[in-house]
Each structure stands twice: as structure tokens, then as C-alpha cells.
Image 1 (cartoon, rainbow, N blue to C red):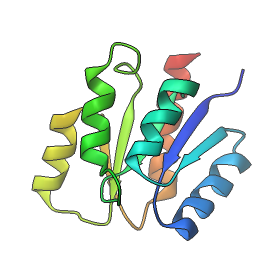
Image 2 (image 1 turned 90 degrees about the horizontal axis):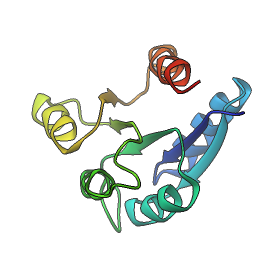
Image 3 (image 1 turned 180 degrees about the horizontal axis):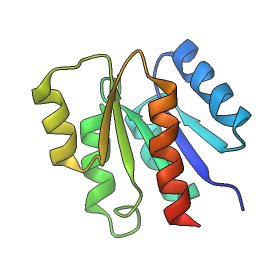
Length: 124
């Protein structure tokens, strides 16, 4: 059974690059362009992990993660926050709303892959 990752990213180029790299490593990847679409996808598909951009239009990542963690249906889905902003306060805010990790852009893909593989092992 494939490990399913929901990639939430409003920048199409960033989203496509991340999707291709994850698919090359045999992950099944779903996508959403903003937090509202991410919520709909998470409730419908129940991914194993979510990579959530924190700064997006329509609904930002902090709000989306907070809503995911408030629901008994989605609260156990691990979320890794992703942002171009590397400020400690943003990292702390992401962890406070429920992210299990926080990665800054440009993404260190090898580090991110290590995190994802840890969760994939726990899920299997």
C-alpha cells in the first residue's frame, strides 16, 4: 500500500517540483493550492502525511493545520509546515498549531525525505 502525501503549495512551480521528486521515490502524491482545498482533500482522502505551505491565499497554513487538528477525523495526520520564512517565531507558531516539523524554503529535499521516511516506517 502506497504512503500518501498531500502537498499543499500555492506556487505551481514549487508544487510540481516537489511532487515529481516525491513520485520518483514511489510516494503517492495529492495536491492542493491553498488551505481550504487542503482541508477538503484531507477529509476526503485521509493522506498519511501533509506538507503544508504556511503562507498561501484563501486560507493560510496555520489556519488549515489548526482546523485539521481540531477534528477527530484528521487530527492524527502528521503535518510538516513549510515556509520561505525562517524566523524562529514562525517555526514556533507552526509547532503550536500542530505541525510536527517545520522546513524552510528552499527545501533541503534530502532532509525532508528523511523526515518523510521516518513517518512512512511508523505508518507501515
